[in-house]
Image 1: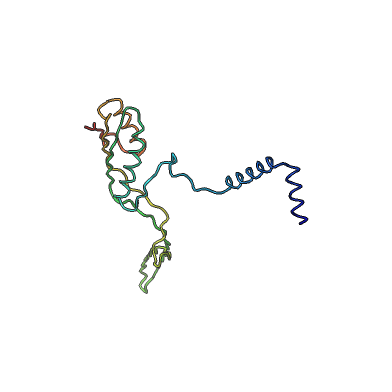
Image 2: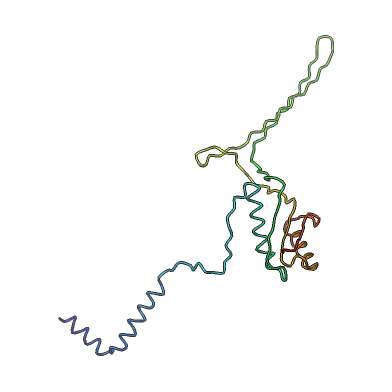
Length: 186
């Protein structure tokens, strides 16, 4: 009973109003400190993941990036992009190279001299274990070069806008201007 009487004295001394405010502040602090999931309605751009290990996936990846960014150009409007690449690109693999060189000088009994030189090159690709298999160790990937770009846009008929689009694609993809075509969308 001693604890109950101390509690009543404490409440009377502080007052019910102040105790209620302190209790609400505590609940508010607990609610604020609870972690929440990030909102899905953020301003972040959603980028579709494409398999860029084949040329078709790499083409789709470039097309999407160009459409999103060219669509921001003033007076261009809606944009559709077609990108054509030359091949699948190239994987650069790690290899161990060894070279042996053997020089032989022979003299026969009649005084003739014969010189021979033997060179042996041996290259062995370094392999790695992963995903329950053995694969070559890839040090880098060289993406395929772009062969041509076609851009179809609402504002593609305007000469100034067309020139800006061609310059932008030239800068981004290192494609010469004669391989970039900008057309007006109907």
